[in-house]
Image (cartoon, rainbow, N blue to C red; front, side, top):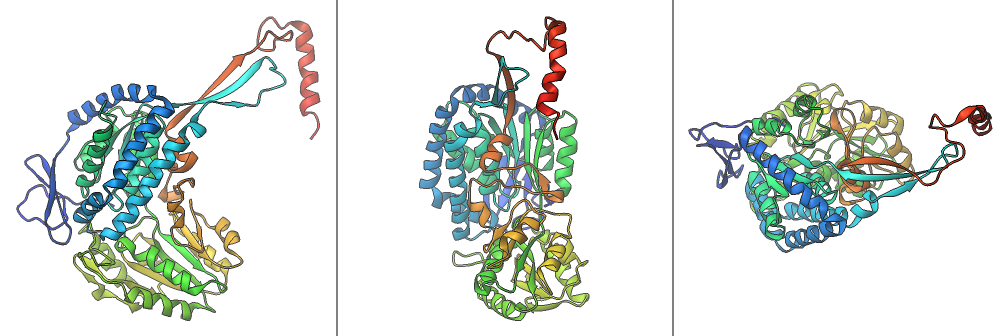
Amino acid sequence: MTAEVHKSADTETPGLPVVVGGRLRSTHPATGAVVGEFPVADDADVRAAVRRAGEAARWWAGLGFGGRAERLGRWRAALARRMPELARVVHDEGGKPVADAVIEITAAIDHVAWAARHARRVLGPRRVGGNILLPDQGALVTYQPFGVVGVIGPWNYPVFTPMGSIAYALAAGNAVVFKPSEYTPAVGQWLVDSFAEVVGDEPVFQVVHGLGDTGAALCAAGVDKLAFTGSTRTGKKVMAACSETLTPVLVECGGKDAMIVAADADLDDAADAACWAGMSNAGQTCIGIERVYVHEAVADAFVDKLVAKAKALRVGSDDGADIGPITMPGQLGVIRRHIADALERGGTAVLGGNDAVDPPYVHPTILLDVPEDSAAVREETFGPTLTVTRVPDLDEAVRRANATPYGLGSAVFSRRSGMDVATRLRSGMTSINGGMSFVGLPALPFGGVGDSGFGRIHGADGLREFARPKAIARRRFRTPMPIMSFRRGPRTDALIPKLVRLLHGRG
């Protein structure tokens, strides 16, 4: 999402980052209570952090897989012991219910454990097949860390999402310089401080605070790779900045994820998943469901169940709330515009509606019969809203689900057709008979296509994302038929075409 920022403290809006005297002030989006203040890093500060990281990276890589796994295990244990403390920071800074913050942190810890445990298996040296034309050569692939990885993180899942880059980059042998969102600097600082308490030898994991210009400085500071999570518009700017130095990038942007509900679906489970995936974290989830396409034969029953579940959710900022405030004040206008446009163009609100936007909160809203070219269907809403559309069959459901430039996550509920539909959906990830369940499985790669970005975090693909493959050919013995040499002679020259015909001459 695009950030708004106050440059002074004259007219502070709760939750809106404020820079005062060179320090970034973070506040609760509902109460305005100050969570913390952090020094803003300028270009020189960012470059200095990257230089320190470069020196630390050599030490960290030299520890090997075992040494890094042992230290990441210490951090994982510290995160587990101090989970209530971190969950409270997440709540205080972003407004997320503490119970949801605990789930987020739990998933992040699981990913730290997976990356540390599997790095040697995934990134260790491996032999690959040779070639009969070069019998003297053995083939080996090794993986080498990039060196310093810059990570620009989001505010909506300030622990789980950046950890998908941080933990995997560290496990692969890189040092990390982390620029957290200006909306959640306290969470980013907490993560870095907790790591330093258990791995204090070298500045392997550092944080730089600031606004968009600090992120731009990180892109240009000499990092060896950059991982970004945020809006598609900002992602394009990051790519353009990194292109100046040919710095490789991993980009995870927004989504407009769809759920398909077939006629043979378990409607109770489908309604529960749509409610959770669409409205948890106040709908501020890049892989959250925003569109539902349901078979017309079960549409009425599904909508009744969905409305009943959503209506029971409680909105507030206390510990008992199910849905917290909208973290970015500016997003309230986007949500309001989407709801109003949907209703003006013939849609019906069976729950919520225009009055659902009650700053800093948005109450659950379910919209029916919304035109497919409306903002509520085409643009990322990032609020606790769902559009539900009746379709005559699964083919039409898939066609509509795929009719978007985004392609991050998706879901399908069906007893018989789940796998068939899942393979046809244009998205990086799909849950069958579940909502967003793929994020809880560390072995699965996470990422999108189209306007949702490219590259993968999590799983073996996520580890390989933060290491360079190095190809090694090793001569094992002296061959009497040297092909790649001026020594080969006329006899070898005559034999090569015969061998090629023998190996490849038959179709």
